[in-house]
Amino acid sequence: MDNKRIRTYAFWVVFTEGAGLLSGLLTKDGAKLYADTANKPPLSPPSIVFPIAWGILYLLIALAAARVDLCPKSPARTLGLRLWAAQFAVNFLWPVFFFNLRAYGFSLFWLLLLLALSVWTALTFRKTDRVSALLFVPYLLWLGFAVYLNAGVWVLNR
Image (cartoon, rainbow, N blue to C red; front, side):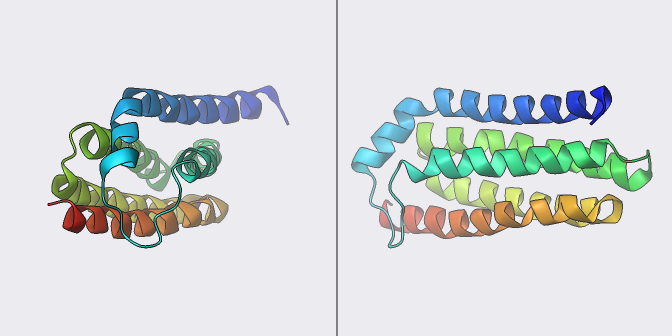
């Protein structure tokens, strides 16, 4: 692998995982309070599952972005990377709304926005690099599960 490819992959992975770590640090106290006090719906995994799952999912979407970034310039590539940035910004803010502010209803609508942006990102990535779109599939499935969990928490903690 040449230096440009290595730098591109390294940038996307470090940026994405670093932002995920920052988000976790910013919401650590709120997440602990949530784990200790909130009523959770059936199928809610133990708290330890979330940082592991998100670490893997962030790696996959970082690899997807890197692959698209390395593709020749095109309108689909540009739109895909812009959508990636938009969905990632929405992703970054969701735990603040959910854990720190305990705004479960608002968080559910925010999460639906994240899911819609992520589907759009994957569909746009598919036009540039099919593998990148496939790398988004586990993320999309997890976001769907997160919608269920968020809705359940909202209903059970009104």
